[in-house]
Structure formats: structure tokens, C-alpha cells
Length: 178
Image: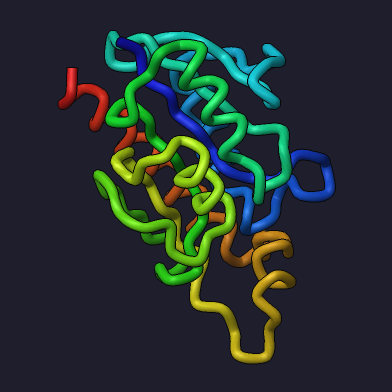
């Protein structure tokens, strides 16, 4: 069966470079590396189909706002009959240091609203998550303001390296699980 790879973020040009949109950015890197065009519209979002490590994949960017991302994931997973263990969700994490990435086979959603929505909608925690560190949040910052602000110039290089590492980790996971 195929894989469903989801990047979490907010749609719309004003959010493009936000810290909260790391998931979308990793998806862009994956799409470029695998030659997948992500302009098809369906599943309350945008998606593309192609191959990674010889396996059929769907790259999905939910077009709902972050807090409702799960709806899009549920629709795509149902349509393509993708089991939870073949779903990979990529998102930003304030509890990880800037530029760090972590891959886990399951676990709780933590404080991330997009992840809460995904767990709620697909009804299980048993899917792979790839977290991109954007932390720590400076003391004087409101959490929402922090995640919805753009990645500053001085962090962009390090973050881009993390996006690349995350894309490679996803490719490796698919290869290992073939």
C-alpha cells in the first residue's frame, strides 16, 4: 500500500515563512527531490503523487488552518486506504532546540494543535511523526506570536539544513519499511 506524507502548516502567503510552517517547507524539499508536483486540489488541501525509494507516495499539504489539519489527513487516508503505520506527519516543535530533528514511530500530540487534530481525526497515535525543532521560545514571547512569526534571517541556514535532514529521514524510513 502507499504512503501518506503530510506537512503541517497554515495556508496563505502571509504564513509561508512562519516557524509554524516547517512541515510545509519539508514537503517542498521532498517534492523537489522526488520530482512530485503538488498542485492537485483535493482532501481539503493540495497534494501530489509520485515515488520515493520506489514506493508510491502521496505528499499532502492540508489547506485547512492548522487546528483542523486532521480532517484533510483523514480524507486522504480514507480515499487511498492508507493504514496509520504508513502515515508520516512533519511539524514544528517548540520543545526541541532550533534545527534539531526527531523521528518517532508514535506518541502523544504534545502541545501542537495540528497534531491534536490529526490524532483526533484518524483515531490513533500509531503513525510516524517527524518533528522539527524551533525552540526555545524566548521568555518575553507569547507562544502564538512566536510560532506565527517568520524564521529570522540568522536562523534560515540552520533551519534549511534541518528541512533537508528531515526529508532524508523520511526517505530512509520509507526505504527501510518497504
